[in-house]
Amino acid sequence: MASLQFRTICPSGLAPQLAVFLAACSLVVFQTSAQVTTGASGRGFKGSETDAQGRKINIRGEAWQGLSGRRMAFTGMRIEIWRGTNSSIIVEAADGVCDPQGDVAFSTNTLTLRASDGRFSIAGVGFRYEWAESRLVVSNAVKTVIRRTASRSTGVPPSAIAANALTEVARADVARRGEGLPANSEVIEILSDQLDSVSDVTLFSGRVRAKDDQGNLSCGELKAFFEAGGNDVWKIEADQNVIFESGDRRMMADHAVYLLSEDFVTLTGTPAWKLGETEGASEILRLNNKTREFAAEQNVRVKLPPRNMLPLDWLGEASRTNAPDSTNRWITIFSERLNYNPTHAVFQGGVRIVEPQGAEIRSRVMTNFFSGPDGKLSGIILQTNVEFRQGETFLRSDQATYWTNADFVVLSGAPMWKTRQGEGRGEEVFINPKAKQIHAERNVSMRLVGAGLETLDLAFQKSRTNSLARTNQEFIVTAGEVYYRAGSAIFLRGVRVTSPDQPDDELKCEVLAAFFAGAENKLDELVAEENVRIRQGELRAAGDKAVYWVAKGLLDVTGWPVLTAPGRKYVGDRFVLNRADNSFRILGNYKIELERSAFKDAARSSANAVQQELIKPSPIKPPSE
Image 1 (spheres, rainbow, N blue to C red):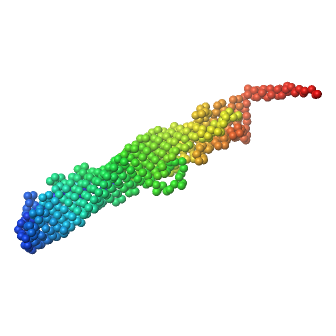
Image 2: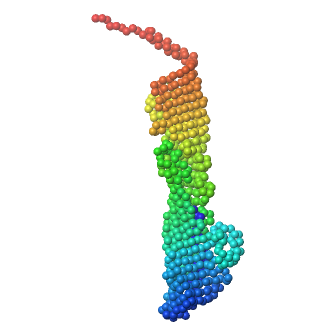
Image 3: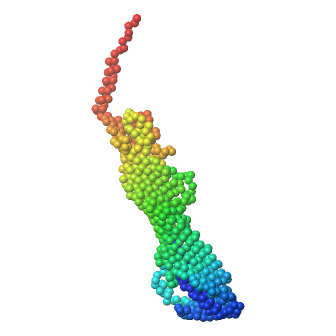
């Protein structure tokens, strides 16, 4: 994004070269116009001078004519400025008028200013030079070309610069012989409607377009500030619809300021950027030319396709079969600050990631990692108060980590989740976005909402009234791990099911599958396997497998189940408990064991009943009348 080198737009040598040109113009006026009178004319003129800096200035012209007020019109003027035997500066003007009384020289025709070694050139149509302010204005179709060798570009080691300095004289000599610059030279071209240079400031204005091999810049005005009396630019300002473009990278702002000493560009006035398919905006944007980094501040907004962000379509209660193609749903990131470089991007302060279907992620810090030459997303780390939200689905943790090659999200630091089916916790939670599955490990606890869990009551006679009427019964499942997705949850290792309403009742097993159904996604079926044990008051049941259909109130225990109650024990191939009609059946082979005391109590009760029947008195008939 920051590969476009803002500082190359205006070379440090432009101000002194313009100053030399202005001095040459003065020499033309004061050496030539002083010798002419009104109406006088001539073919060809020339002159030479050596200024205080030791520069030799040669002047040539095709023709001149004296005008009123000591003004002189000239055509075909050529000025050469030499420093020693090195390359020269050449100024050419098709025609013009010098007016020493008005302290001005002007023309509506062409003007060119160039270095003989090809380092730079300025060309335009129409110019005006004012002696009092040492001001030059080129008013139309200005084209400025600057050529810089690679050794002058950003980031070149000092040793390379020193080595290049040793070849400066040889290179200049080659250029003077017309053999051109080295192949590694960098060409910067600036087109503008006008150029205005006065004192230590040069202004390009009117549809400014600058381009080099790094990219393009366009704006309404481009202003270069030179050090007082020096040769170097210390600041560049661009205004009015500033646009940087480099490949698939684009930056826009109302105003840009580049400080060369810090090598930073600051963009203000609703700056925005585009990196491939990623778009962003903020209130302030700062670019570091050396490191290709940038920092966005205040009201940061980034828009990008889902494939460049942590997947969010796994959130929610359904698979969204009717939702539009995920590749067309752009994701927006909001934050207070963004620090970007080619390897990673850090969002800070109130980070919020929003997906069009309503899914949302929140955190204090998010770091996106990029890899490969194309800078593809390789991973994301969310930190501090991490929250995932979608409808009734909610997840929270201290940290979330996502690596694209692993294709799952890891929540750590007291992770928890909440869905329409209930709430869950674990020491570490893994999310598989493709399978839309949550996997929790170690000290897993999940609160599920079902219909009539109390129908697990094993009593032979219904002891709890309206047991089937309670539709929001809650129970807690603890386990070593759980795999949860919309429609089902599978618990493994040391599974224990309890209910807050019946703390003395529990179900234990090694594997428990819970299935949900209906529009409300309520608990519909429980399947317990491997060493199944049920405790309810004084009743105990055990078997290899137990299936509980919540809506029907049916409990089916298989695997040579055993049921024990005070004084009784039942063993059979299969137990079926139906709480709808309060019936209990033993199917297949079975046996019943009764303790002696229980048998005696049962026999005594039967004998008492028979005896009461035998001694019941006969009814007394009333006497007949």
